[in-house]
Image (cartoon, rainbow, N blue to C red; front, top):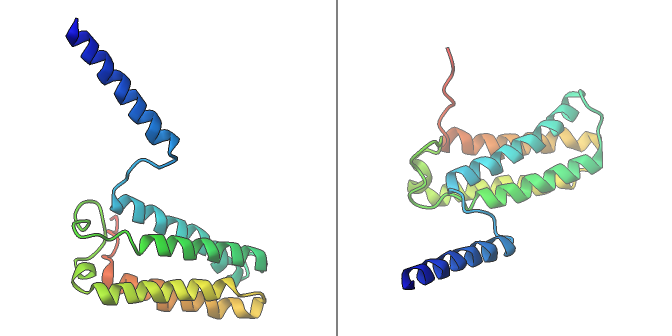
Amino acid sequence: MRKVAYFAVGIAMTGLLATATLASGQPETTSPIKARQEAMKTVKEHFVPLVKMVKGAAPFDAATVKKNAEVITRKLEEASKLFPEGSDTGKTRARPEIWLLEDEFQTLFKTAIAKAKALARVNEASQLAPAVMELGGKGCKACHEKFRTAKDKKM
C-alpha cells in the first residue's frame, strides 16, 4: 500500500511541476544551436522584403522597414548570446574561430545590431539601399565570411 501511495505522490508532483513550468510561460528549453538558427532564420525572413524594396520588386514602405529592422535588431541581440562554450558541435555551421576570437565575433555582432538600428530609422526610399547595404555587408556578410562555414552545395 505504501508503494502505491509513494507512486501516487510521485505522479502528482510530476503533474504539478509540469503545470508550474507551463504556467510560468517559459518555453521548452532548446539547444543554443537550434535557438540561434531560429533567430537567424527570422533575421533573413525580415531582411528579404527590404532587399525586394531596394530592387524595386516591392514598393518602399517606411513602416515595414521600421518593423522589420526592429525585429532584425531584436533577433541579432538574441543570437549574439547563443554561442556558449560547447555549442560548436552538432548540426551547426559555426566555425571554431567564434570561440577562439570571441571579442572580434561579438564586435561584429554589435556592428550588425547598430546597422539594424540605423535601418529602423530609414524613412525615405533614397535612404534604404545604403542602409540595407551597410547591414548586409558590414554586418551579416562580414561575420558570415569569417565565422560561418559555407553551405554544402547539392550536386
